[in-house]
Length: 373
Image (tube, rainbow, N blue to C red):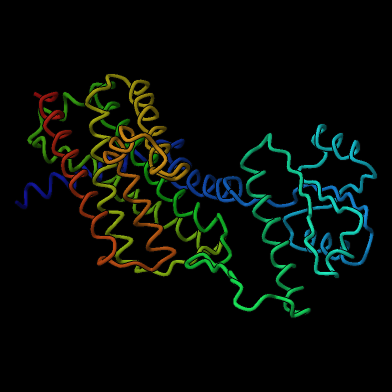
């Protein structure tokens, strides 16, 4: 046992020396994850702000000005144009100079004060359906809030009417960075550890040192451990590093248990390193390993639920997502960050991730031993 640990220890030291001897590898491990987290934290956002807006006001009263002011004060809309006719509104939307047009008809205020039914037309440029849907939601919320305020002041609200006041839990301001940053942390750990693991073993084979390792007393299991432990340590380091940046720089709350996050990362790394080991067994060159890594990485991200809801995917594709470790880790890391969930809530994801990781490591190790043999 002592000899085995000693051989693994020397193998781990050798790997760290080999990693840090490469000058290009240090920025990839320590700098790239932070840069990508900062870039993605700002760029990958579903919040839509400063939507260009035109106000076509035929009523020109203090009421219509107040509604327009509320749109601009929300921070979501920016009033750039005050067209004087329908044709000008159409031209602004056609040219893309405005995404939203607010249209007040004549008599809007008098009808409102007379408690008659009034209509407020909101025209949207539907070319970008996502932005249009978000803008429509913002506009509907602003108008509903104004309508509720008027009803409270004039007290003409019908008795027993339904007063809907939505309240978001766990992410009260519905900031997309609170949703995206934990996902980016999971992706950073995946890409760094997957790439390093798959490349390291293939590199040994390419430069011919694998044969030298095979003639040493080290056993295949010890060789696998010695090759994967350094990348697991790097994975933990990157997880702590990008988590620290996410909490300090982006002010993403972490309400759950840090030890539970560490345990989840350990189980997640079991799958990631297993897939990296598998890629190393099917690749003969570093170029093949890099290509195989990205062929695995892209579907893993797309089928994880980070960008698109898994429930919206076809049934066959949903079945494939069960083989994706990122699917389970995203639920765990967001649960820990935003909900403060514990093991009593997250145990199904932990169990699935562990079974997947153990299966992948076992299959990859068997294939790796056959390649050595």
